[in-house]
Length: 183
Image (cartoon, rainbow, N blue to C red):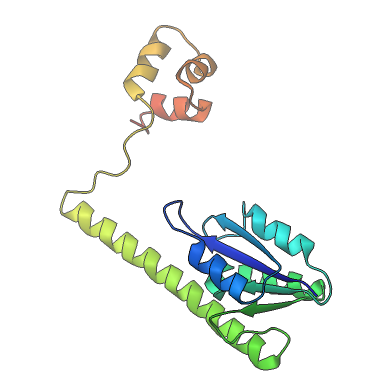
């Protein structure tokens, strides 16, 4: 039996030290870490490596369930993968052990709360943006394409592909700028 730790933080300015120390203290033989958002499993190569490595009798250890997933669907997919490999899932800070019925139940409840927290954060962000727009202080993202330059190049007879190549942008961005949808 191998105890494999998985640590994750969302942004590059956050630190993995606390999670990694807790996983070492919990007896993890191996720890994989990454700095990626937990809102999706897409692009999380260390998680994929851990799941591929699990064998029968192994334990996947995390500090908290939200380190694995922030959506109940992703969490359930991960748990199914762990179970299919004959392994179990445990958390150092939460009473979760998927080898028990109570542990599985608590896991599902925590997954629902993690997804709920993500949705609340998104709603607050959108409310803040709407408020800033009504006060006239929200300007949005700065344009990444100089629409005037695209139009000038097009007027000189350059085609969308040549403009895109010269400016280092996508052709679709050129078309949007020419249609007045960007800039």
